[in-house]
Length: 231
Image 1 (cartoon, helix red, strand yellow):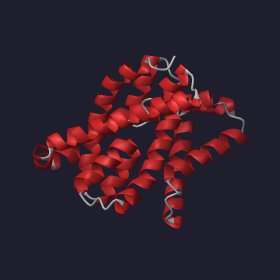
Image 2: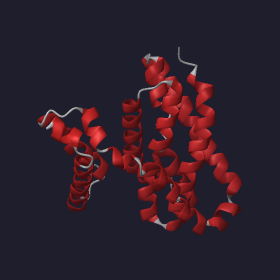
Image 3: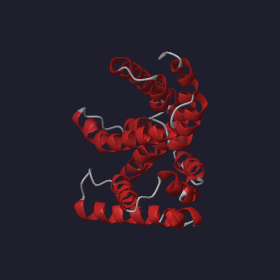
């Protein structure tokens, strides 16, 4: 089975997309926040890899085509931002301050958590970019010598938890502003959260999309400042 994956340029891609479609069906049936397609499809893929004893590197080689779409998909999120350009101009200062505070809070929480748990520098550098989209997070991880696999896991877990909890938190705190809600989804749960924000409305989707881009840039600036603090 390893040879089948390694010799095929598309078998891993078909498995990934097929698992995601199954995840969508499960989500439609169960209608539970725990039945997120990314979570269920990941579980399906992991089970198949374990059952057929397929190496992760072999699977990654066969599914590598999907990673080419990460960056263009992120860039395509500029469309809802363009449609809400006037809203962005009117609230620009508040939006930028909000995103910066979110990035700083993420960096500080990771630093203190790593200190308390005694995490090694390589693990610390791997989870630093957990709140930005995968394409940007992997670039930051490579720059500081982190482990890409850990980075991907931390990004996915952050996105899943954020997308499941943000709406409830906003309800509890009585946050009704579509701008604030959208920024929360994008800043805390990046691309996964943005898919939820787009479902809530165009303004939420635009703010979440903007948050992904700006948070990515800010994290690239903030990360070097914090990267050497754990030794």
